Image (cartoon, rainbow, N blue to C red; front, side):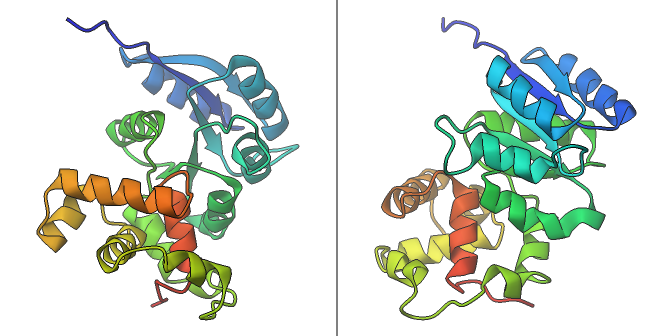
Length: 229
C-alpha cells in the first residue's frame, strides 16, 4: 500500500494570544497536521516562514510591526523566489483588505469565526495547491468593491487581450469561477463531469499563466468580466 503522507506543516501568524492558541490547538489535534511555529507579528512571521518553510502559513491581516498583507506580499508575491501558500484569516470588519491580500499572493481566505472543521478543511485545501475563496468573501469582492477591482477595464486592456486566448467554454468556466462556484457547482451548472471541469480550470490557468483560481478571479475582475451589484 502507499506510504502515509507527511503531515501538513503549519505556521500560525496571529497577534492575539488567545486566538493563536486556539488555532494551534485545533491544528495540532489533526493527525495530518503539525504546527511547526507561531508568530505574533508580520515581521516575525516572515522570518519564521523563511526559516521553517511551512506548507501553509495561516495569516491574520491586522498585526503589529508589519500587517498580514505586507507579510503575504513578501512571502508569496511576484518577487518571491519560492512563493508560500498563505491562508488569510479575516473578519468582516476588515473585508476591504481582502482584495489587497489577493493581489499580494494569498491562496485563500477563511473567516476568523469559522467553525473548526472549516478551518481545518481550509488548511488542507490550500496545502493541496488549490485556492479557497469563501462565498461570502467572493460576494464582497464582486459587490461592494467591484469598482476598485475593475479600475479601468477597456476592450484594449492587457486583461482583455489575455482573455482572448480562451475558448468560449473556457470563458464560461472562468466566469463561474469568478462568481465563487466550486468545481462541483460548475459541473452541475454546465452539465459536465467534475473531471471535465477540472481539466478546463487547468487549461485556463495554463493559458493565462496563472498560479491558481484566486489569481483567475482577480484577472476576471480586472477585465470587467464580473460586474458589481
